[in-house]
Length: 335
Image (cartoon, rainbow, N blue to C red; front, top):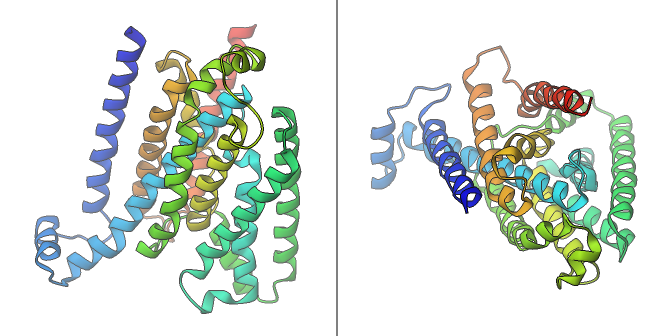
């Protein structure tokens, strides 16, 4: 009971932080805006400069930061719990690579000129194709098969992405592709939000439904099955986790590009505060991922260093030292 109260308090603190940064993200940016006046204009239906900046630029960007960060954190916690591997992260499934390949193909074919939605839709198509291939490869196999299939799919998608980059005739197109692959929420609109939202909602529900099974899996697969949890097959825990993570992460990568380390670092930081029970780590990881990405996105907007720093670069710069520190602490504990 004490651990449950501790987790509830942690969720409250994280939610408060997310709400605070959400408001700050709307109010602060490169352009100074009187927030109260802009809000009044939005409510009155007036299209002032401040209202347009808040409603059409900052709001969709902030919503995407919450969704993308939350999904990366949640999927990282779920995969680490299911695979019982603290090094697991969303990129392990190969779906991120599939989304990147789909988006790069849109650049290569010139479909970007057709519609603003072409790029995220191409990324989402690539993610769904990768998820279908992954499910076909895994079948009724266990965690080892999932790890091997994910590694193979990631390598194959990376190779195809490199091939497309090699074949792109224009250096400007190559620059645009590399710029997108580094991850960013710049210039995102509500079109991107609506494309991302269905996958985020479905993926979240599927992953959260596996919470109790993750607790049982800490005792081993045989114990989990004896407690009535179906691990494999259609409707099994593995299918729900893989499909949920694929939908959520694929949808997010399709609109934001590759953003690393969030799904790896956030569960690590929060696990000691949740009593090491996988189901209690899920909601805090979603909130913690949202909090981290909101903070990182505000930093890239407010720190003037010439061209805006790519969000994926900043999360890697922040996440890698934290992870190195955790590795050193773990080494000292073992020794």
